[in-house]
Image (cartoon, rainbow, N blue to C red):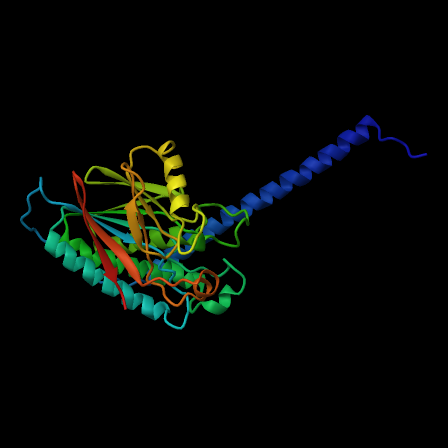
Length: 330
């Protein structure tokens, strides 16, 4: 007949189990801290060899402060490093230069007093987001996040900063920036989009940009104030998919967010690589962002859909949205 464990033996077994759980939690935390520390060290080392062309100071231009609009430039889903039959790191750089030139022309025409920029996530492609991804990239994740993407972001800001008195940059991270497969238990802050944003901010400082303020959110959203209007920006993987996108799902999320996140009436969503905009109701207007990426085989096969290479620029005043412009890329 098997003996029942004594109370002492039961306590010893429980203590052993707890020690094992504590050790697992400690190892997981230590690994997370080490990862973040290594990223910070790597970024610092990478910046030592970075050469950035000095930026010209903002030019003084006559403008009516009361009537001058504010500009909003949405940069989303670059996925630099992705390799398709029509897209690569080289093509991405060319298209970023194209959109920068178009944005500069619009700024010269409209003469805004403030340029708001949102970096809306998935600026890097990643290398462990889905099975087989390493075979569909032309740069490793390290190069994407601390070299190529920050240099492209810096190019946009250094070219546009002389044209406006003030630039306000807001950033959210995307699902392609995460450090492993979905549900892997990694820290939200261990996201390579955030590495790219922080590196770009430092590059802009090195280049002498003095009129830019950065708001790099570690949350899943960020709210910008544009001419007094709240613009809530999310990457968009929080919203269920569709073909090419699900307006009902966007509406449902937007209505829920109005009860939890105050002071916004415009909603900007990325992730779906589709350009669209319109009223959700009389109180909320939404923007769905395109991407410079092209030749997405997954979208063509699974969704029977392929978007044009587009980004967006808008102008606002105190009354609301004045104009919306497509930045088209070859």
